[in-house]
Length: 240
Image (cartoon, rainbow, N blue to C red; front, side, top):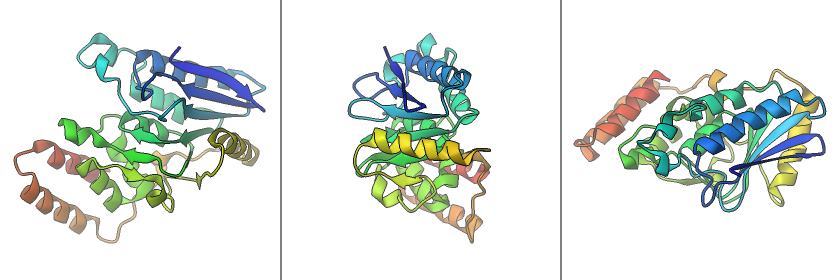
């Protein structure tokens, strides 16, 4: 089973369980959507936690599905993120060890996000000649700011969760048991009531966005002039 569903003290815990890095293959995506729907239909569930089993929150797309029908079979990752984001009950993404690519994009769709120290956070798609394809270029700048997001997306370099602790990406950096911390946070969110925040609704504040983006274009032109994807990443971030 690619996703495990359990209830803990009135909180539904949806656990991605697709070793080794909880890749977001079709069965995992389906399990996420079904878990969100199940939790919303259960009057005894007040909130939802999304977490990864084993050694990762999620390493992103399941590369074994690339160029196969399953890669675009519903629910797609965008559909799964929409289900998380549109949940009537608060969803808390609890990140540990690795949240990369589609895994980070999934977490950005949650209403709240907490992380364990030492988690590696990245959108590494550029290293494969790809753009982050599930909203990362739009949501990450709203969560960590324009400069940090652009540097992360254009380089693909992982950043430790501690370095992002003071950004709106994380509501809490949790010591101790991550599930305990996430369930506690989810219950508090439910107590406060909605509407629950969406990263997509935040404005990107920067004193000179146009100047910084031009600086980034110049830097990429010098360092990666023969590679089109970093330039396309900047185009997408500019649209944000």
